[in-house]
Image (cartoon, rainbow, N blue to C red; front, side):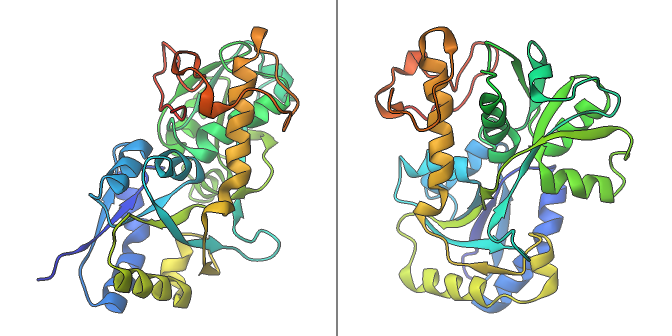
Length: 298
């Protein structure tokens, strides 16, 4: 048997759920490439990204934040991303949810609260909710406390069970959990919805065989089978490039600048100021004593 293509997946939900949802894509790629395909779910988002950077995976489906962090250390190459019907296109959204009976009517009402977030490197489960809160004038560890739960489903459960007063998660996962009856309709409500986020990207490791890369590009672009596309809510896959996630890079910079300003006051978004690339790692806001985190700061 030939060496399998090693495909990395993020643990946005439990590994069995992630593997089952991607089984149709696995079968499709095996047929198209005439080679075995192995699906590997990382223990964390960082573990998947680091495995791709280290060459232990051949391709991986990375969220914008995971890709941005890992591409600083290796020549990773995005090549395909899902696109959706209507005006959504190749984007998705995050939501901040609260218990249905919560008195909160705006993000300002979360000041001083503990907020559930997903994996430390999750785009819609951590970074975009933090940016939503920042736009409302709330800075992590100054105006609210973070509590990271890992998967989006675990965030939803924590909020629904009122173990925390609010949580950030993927809107798509929230909608699907409701549709599948895994959370009750009267247990949660959406307090805020993010702007459009650039979609996840299938990404090559550095040094992958160029002929295999071209075969993979063509396999994804030609994909029209409903079952593999359904897992991504996609109409199709389209080409992806590094610049597709520039918007998220700016949001990460906004968060960093807000945490480095004396007193923690947010800067106006896009305002020239402190540069994440030259910030001291000891003041990097992507870590804190109670919740160690990935350093996007070099």
